[in-house]
Length: 326
Image (cartoon, rainbow, N blue to C red; front, side, top):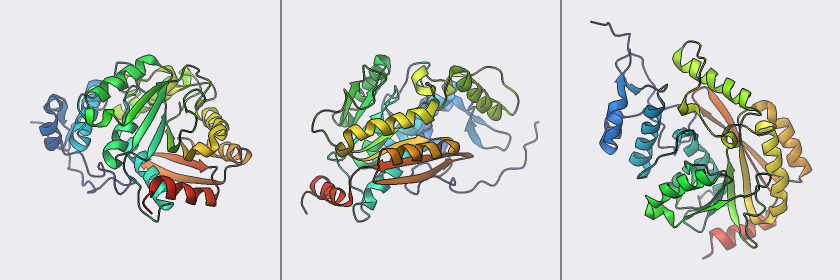
């Protein structure tokens, strides 16, 4: 009989995640399996006698995501086509909660909720994850853009399976990959925030090397090939100049709709990119800039948010959009 290793003492909550994040506690696989019986076939016992899944197995990772979304957010029929990015649910939920905090800071500490609060998801992707969580957690409505019809079809299929959310999420095709807001944002349309996970890498080779490092860390040994759970289409994982240039482009183009949105934001994975991003925000004459550290395990990202609204304009926005009765 194989001898078990000494059982690890795990903290009750995962460090770094937002206080309102539903995923702060360790995964309870018994409860997840009740919500999503298909997960059971992927649950294994590790050397410490704990239930887990093989995170090297893309099908297991996909099923865990499906179970988390169904158990915590009542999302039905979540699935994505092979080759598209399978997002880490806890980290995506953190972004949503931190955006809620940014809104609450301008609203006397109260998070504005309901469908009158409208977000713009730049690159909604095939997984549609931000609108799903944002609507379930706060009742917000969303516009999600993407330049890949196949990704939008997948997102639409997910929404079709979730009628209670469907009416609050509008998907729009961006026909010009050089544009972010132009051709998508309608005249006189207002957004309370934007969110964006930019392509982190500057080339296919860099993206592949990054994926191999992740897989090697998971396996505890060198790995030569990538796997689907760390996959992603071109525009999801890499673009010319990587996240630094992409973020600079968002900043430059956000100036074109400066008065149409309260908080613009982008997720930055590399701290070394912040100096040039701050410089771009200075050149764009952003009125206020916020940087929020987000961590999940050993990974640390930064949510950078900015607004062009003056304090007077901010107050007017809050009164007219978030507190119409006051």
